[in-house]
Length: 610
Image 1 (cartoon, helix red, strand yellow):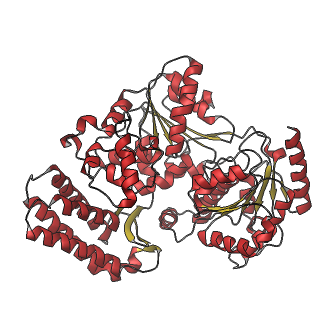
Image 2 (cartoon, one colour):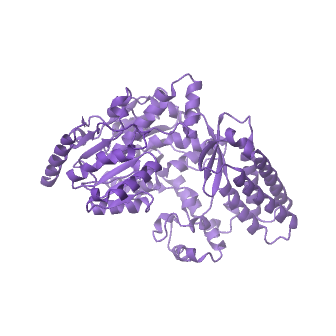
């Protein structure tokens, strides 16, 4: 893999690589990047992976090759302390006082201003939005603390570095800015390496779309009231009140049911409130413009109101550019979206530029040996992929159990039947179990089932997503060593539990995305227009790759062993079921509980000897 990456960098080529767990793919792309002498951007799926790459992997490889390399870590501006905004914070609610004091003390200790340094303040603390900036409210060079700006320092370091580590959100924000004609803020690079590349297509759809939500409107209203306080302007205050009323009216007229709605289906109910919001935005913007160059803050607010007016016009127009319009309803907010039907041509235009090499890698890019699904979504038609399977003895250390006689996934009794078939495995292993669900409803049903059937746990602890932060649940799961964890969504990927603490991963259903999901609807509509088959060309390969991710939680080390339990009868009852087993090859399959018992007993004996 390292040789292939080195060749791609040298030839400014594009390369797609699927590298299984344990191949050492991080070193396989880092080493040629460091030795190439080319300016390189490495993009990862999460900030946690970013930190691991920068603080652990790069220093280790730098020592190994004995060559100094200047590297920089660059995150989105919301990750850096904004000294100016910190100075503006008045005494907050008592609940925030402790966090704010921690930030104020840290201000004088930090060099980078990266909030991940301050572990005493939780990442989701409400204090962070008060003391960090956004692209909308940053004052730029007009800021009185510009010379101390941590974002500016981080970007300057990135421009001077040989290698820059970013995350996908930052990379895509930059690519979207290039698409709109803005000056990109990431340094120009000769090589771009994207790890966890399977996440890029769906993220790109979001970045190249348009959206506007009531939360950001309310935030601007708060900023407007604060910035116009020094001015005695009854007319301006009246217009700000009118804008607030318009935002509330939109929320009142929108559907009560949480979730996602096609905009066309609800437009009749919200058309009047959308029009009133457009008028109120225009009037507030005009009133702020009448104040002239009163302050830098008001200038920024005028820009924000103008941008919001433009986005609202696109979202509310019936003849907007080709995309799917939808409405997202949350308990205390709503958001309008316009999702493009396809971004592959946009991505291809940015990637296929002739002077940069692009390397895409992940443990899940191919269905079997077929990379066409990923290639078509990325605009990489004709680019062949390389596969490096996991070096672990998957065929010896893993087993797929297909419980016979389960009801169809749509049957209301499915979750109960699944757990009835899965929990007997707890008597066969001293290790722990993940139960991964495709929906929150199924997860909640599982919690109720365990409440009624407490005896099946014995002395084991039950952990459930939503009861505590993900990292805390995983820490406790590792410490207990024999717990049962119920999870969905974020537990399907990026979770690493090594050793006997995890010996069973049970998956309730094949992870087909809902056809009513707007991202899915947009993609299926595009495929239909192109004359393709939405199920075979998109839904099936996407579900197969998701299953591969979920099952990939099991064997994380060369001595790991365990059972993947697939509780969906469609695997054996439908012709397409074999595609899913193909993705998990060469792991053997059984429908016999006796085989599972023998396998786990044998594996635990080997583990004890090892």
